[in-house]
Amino acid sequence: MPIGYFYQRMNLKQKIYGHYLREINNRIAMLQHILADLKESGSNETKSTAGDKHETALAMLQIEQANTRGQLQEALTQKAVLEKINTAAAAPIIINGSLVKTNRGYFFMSTALGKAVLDNCVVIAVSPQSPLGQKLMGLTAGEQAEVNNTTYLIETIE
Image (cartoon, rainbow, N blue to C red; front, side, top):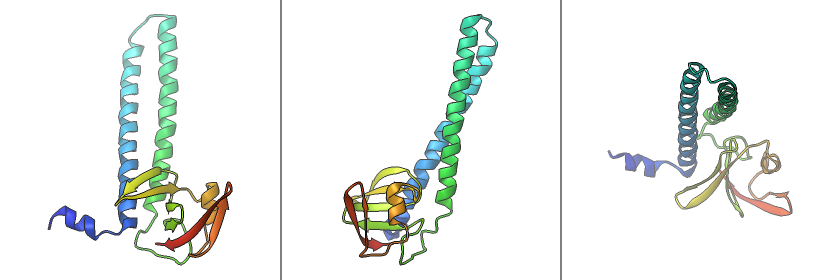
């Protein structure tokens, strides 16, 4: 059977999960590539002996490597959070991994990964530690949460 058939059979929550997992894997691969390039640049830089310019360039490379390593660590942490989610699990209350439909759109309780559009639905991946995430966690369909003078009425939880 064609791959498209299986994609159509997946529910929205599974599609969203797959999308964010692909996004984070792509980000990890990109950051690893950048780190490898920076390491190579650092190796080439140490072969040069241009005095102060050399020291400044080497220091800048080290700062960039440290920043990239930090971003990579954050991405790996986000991936670990995603991998703990069971997309088949359903609960009557909002938990980590819930897909929540509100009067203000869809929210995927996982880790802060931003906005995605799947099946003409705008979904925002929200961390349970975020202000909105904290207010939504533990609520059920029909309840509401208010953040920054905006009310979110929970319509469904998947």
